[in-house]
Image (cartoon, rainbow, N blue to C red; front, side):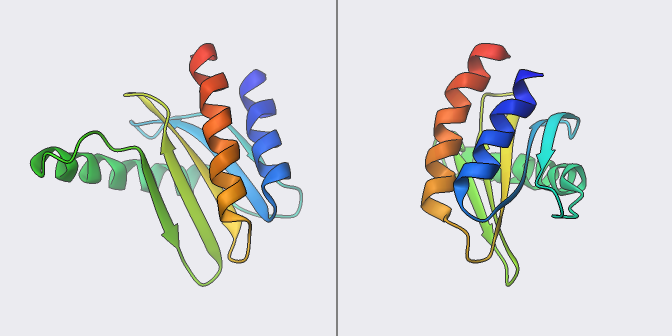
Length: 119
């Protein structure tokens, strides 16, 4: 499937990429790619973040801040980058804590253009 190939390219070229998922705002995954040996349940990550994104979108609306574009969550072990594809979908990338955050964001931006054509 084209979605998995797009996600694979992002994960493998980001530098420290572990996994990526394209998911509906309703928490239903369209497709995912997990780097061999990463041992992540990226769908579970996406489901939890879909709930959080819904709340952040409400906050953006209440503050008249404009539409949500991106969220980054950094922890001791991971960097999670979430970008909005459109009103219905988002893409999430999980990087190692020392992964290449900037390159990951750049690759996600390129991937979104391709994903929008396919959705």
